[in-house]
Amino acid sequence: MIEIRPFIPGDRESWEPLWQGYLTFYKASLPAEVTNATWKRLNNPAEPMHGLAAVLGGKIVGIVHYLYHRSTWTTADYCYLQDLFTADQARGRGVGRALIEAVYERAQADGAARVYWLTHETNKDAQALYEKVASRTGFIQYRKVF
Ligand SMILES: CC(C)(COP(=O)(O)OP(=O)(O)OC[C@H]1O[C@@H](n2cnc3c(N)ncnc32)[C@H](O)[C@@H]1OP(=O)(O)O)[C@@H](O)C(=O)NCCC(=O)NCCS
Image 1 (tube, rainbow, N blue to C red):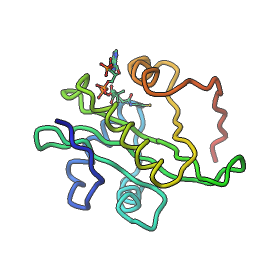
Image 2 (cartoon, protein in one colour):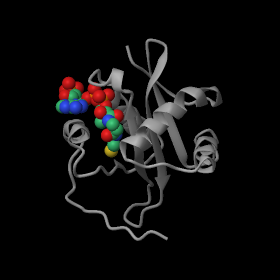
Image 3 (cartoon, rainbow, N blue to C red):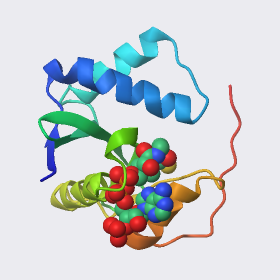
């Protein structure tokens, strides 16, 4: 049975390798101060940023982060699902799906109008999951980095 629950501050040691695994997957690395700030924000109820852990066999094997923001198109907030990661050894057991569905549940309960996210066009594994739980929008992302 997969248990999905919010992070508690004591989860940092379990969260960090999964967070780093996710960054490595996207060939990214972040300064320690960013990881520290992210962890703090995920555990601060005053922040619009939240995280959930998937626990299997007593171990955290998956994580998801999501945040709320305003929309000009609705009075309700939108929920952006920013990061999703399942540990290698726990893949294919429904962890990713359970994390997405848990975000749906919470976003709905919090009054959000939608949950949405991005993935890289080459990430076919993730798309195999996403095609089962959501619809593809056809929008493409542009970015200007400062
Ligand atoms: C994408 C990822 C989160 C999927 O996690 P997971 O826990 O293995 O996914 P699930 O077991 O919940 O899979 C759910 C469904 O998606 C499908 N699926 C997931 N991974 C798949 C794969 N590699 N190949 C084919 N189908 C796959 C499964 O068939 C499953 O369908 P079912 O529930 O009807 O059997 C995981 O592979 C991962 O962490 N990848 C690296 C990081 C990443 O890509 N994150 C997302 C970035 S946008």
